[in-house]
Length: 125
Image (spheres, rainbow, N blue to C red):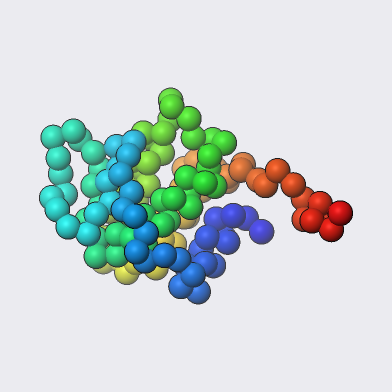
């Protein structure tokens, strides 16, 4: 199963942490209050479900850890925030935002290459 489909399944089944620490870094800030702009030019996502959207960013960070590096992390994270803000402006609810972000991330950055360092057969040894 594709890890992005797995993340979507978790979200659809409400198996996420709605109280996740709000994400901040690499040009992206996710918060439930505050201004939607700052003097640093960060992409700021202000949403009542900031914990859930932060959970998604942490999942994407883990899924794409082998593809994100110093040279592209700002592009990656600011794109994720822009995708969230676009979906929010379209009036999508939190679950639809997650769905949209996962679709656009895979379309923009390709499928994640991060795979576990073991096969499930290794668990039977």
